[in-house]
Every structure is written in structure tokens, then in C-alpha cells.
Length: 120
Length: 107
Image (cartoon, rainbow over all chains, first blue to last red; front, side):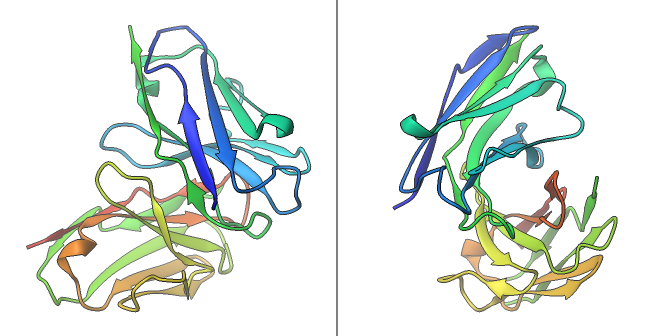
């Protein structure tokens, strides 16, 4: 059974760095065809894909946010970490980690999401 | 980057109605399109991948079609439990991209 769970602070201040951890089970991120993405959703707004790390270490970022994002994995702990620098109130959103179905990544599983509020 | 445009942004229909949502890609994505359903306060759920392939366990009233830049998502007979947001998402290229969403309500 595949599960993913996000963890991180519920509240951060403007200019601070956000660190989110995705802990998963039911698969290994060292296995071929596995990958983990981060997606966010501001309250009442659409989904926005942020970043992905693949089983082979390939990393991809949102073009508009790539200067602020870093994604990494700890295969031994079954965790993926996302950091986002220079947080702003517009970054207030629910942040999801997920295995999104693509040609190179199998399955489609999502965490429940974690709401991060950025205060000014 | 590929942009995804969904329409309408919202719709209201009666139980039993046929509902159609369109999604347009800014460039050719072949058939590399997912459709998601998101109920209030929940994570998205994949309904269709590859533009027209229904996920296991998804009711057959849901369907998808299209290729290239123009895609359609249909609910053949709207049910009360279909009240949700629906999103298209391309996976032809990275970065991945979602459409703006369609809110489906029961009239």
C-alpha cells in the first residue's frame, strides 16, 4: 500500500525559508519508474506543480519558482524534502507531495496535504 | 513551458445531465493528459490518464477524448457525488502543468 504524508510548519514569516518533508511508504525511490513531485494549491485556487525528483536523481523545477526551490531525497529514510526560500504571503497554500502518473513515473498517489500560512 | 487552458471555470447542471469540460494545450501534447477530480478539502484523484484511459474503479460515466492540443472530459449522467473541481494536467513535457480547474455543481 502506497502512502505519502507531508510534514512541516503551519506558519512561517515573510522572507523565511520553508522546509517540507514528504515521508512515504509502499515503494522505494531507488526503484526504476519511481518519482515524487510537490504541488501546491492556494486557498480557493488551482493546483500548481512545483518540483519533481526521480529515482535516478533527475530533478525538475517549475520555471517560475526554480530560483527559490530545492528538492532532495533520502532514500534510506524514504523521504523527499522541499525547501522554498524567501517566503511571501502569496505562497500561502496547501502543499501536497505526490507520485503523479507520467510516462516515466508509475502510479498516482497523493498525500493529504499540509497548509502553510505565510505571515507578513 | 506548456500552458493548459480549461473551460468553463464553473458549471451548474442537473442530476442526469451530460457535462462536458474542455482543455486546450498551448502546444502538441499528443495524448499525454491526465484528468483529476478534487473534492472539497481532499487531495486530487486521478480519473483518466493518456487522455482517454479510465483508472481502475472509476465509474464508466466518466470519459475523456482528444489528442494534440484539444481535449474533452465528459460526465455522461451527472450524479450528486460528482460535485467537485476537475483539473486537466499535461505530462508531455516537464515542467508538468495543470489547467485552471472547472467547478462542477448540482443545480
